[in-house]
Image 1 (cartoon, one colour):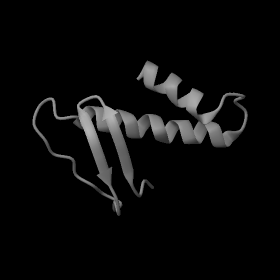
Image 2 (image 1 turned 60 degrees about the vertical axis):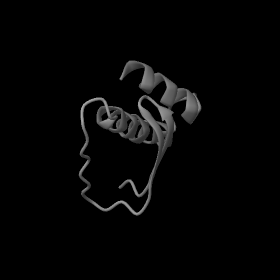
Image 3 (image 1 turned 90 degrees about the horizontal axis):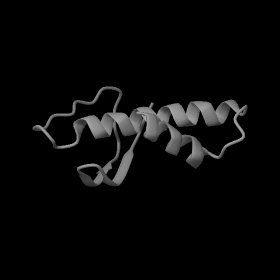
Image 4 (image 1 turned 90 degrees about the vertical axis):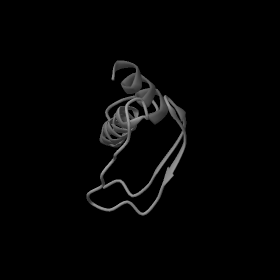
Length: 72
């Protein structure tokens, strides 16, 4: 489960710092406010952790994340 989120200069999200997230969270906002960027960043981060923790990839976590962000 994701407990906190910190994003800086990621798409339209200039400074996002959420703490104490619960099991279910609702993201609401107008068009172009960064909802999709937020979801893509969370997806890529979670997949990066899964791939890195498996241990069969010689790349660093940062390299894996960059690759996932590129293709997402």
